[in-house]
Image 1: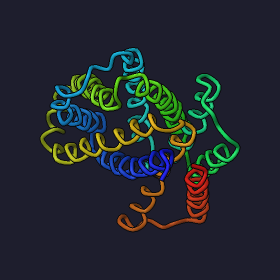
Image 2: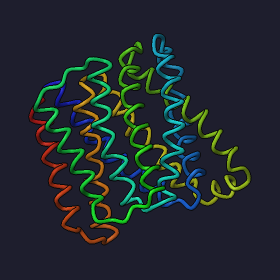
Image 3: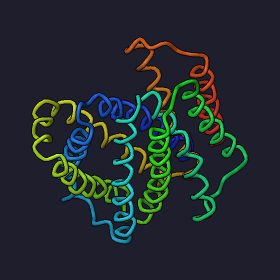
Image 4: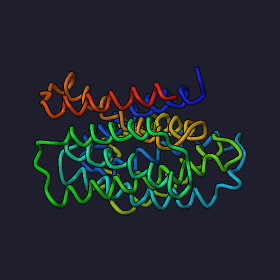
Length: 278
């Protein structure tokens, strides 16, 4: 198995875990407090590793840029989930991200992209967006979802460059979670004030579970970015919508509409193209 194929499989696993984390976030009553719990637990879980990995020399600038972009991303994500259902917002925000990330990676950082990979990215992005067809989307929810997609594309490219600049992948991964959890979780908790304490008492268990899965999902993604190109991997991570749909159909007993079926077919076809092209 080639390095590219290993990275691709890591990104598929990352997508599955990512869908679960977002499902837990969406289910929380106070989504900003839920996000503070998720990121806070993530930081606590990786803290011991900070004593065993080298400092991310050469990547501090990328880490700061990633932190700022993630802050905007999380605010937009929370607003999108507050404005509409996850089944509406999630496909939109995840659908626009890979195409934007691929464009930035190729034009700005001159990453290679073949016609086959471009076709796979287009199939995945189109399929994800097709899943959202037929649903009423307000102007506000559409705006927040699109803004979230833009920030996803930006932090994807930033973190891909950062993890390659760091001495090891693990040094960048650990410090990513320490900065996000130690900064954004505290900021969100202070933002919510006493309401955070009430949410923490009621929702600390799902927050801990989501925090652990969050560490796994983005660690897999970051490590994969060190092994292969951004356009391919950014698109493969959006297969998370396949797992989100499976949860909705088989666990939540939601109906699979024609639009969702066609979208899933497009995503699966795009993922197959990207995997075979490796």
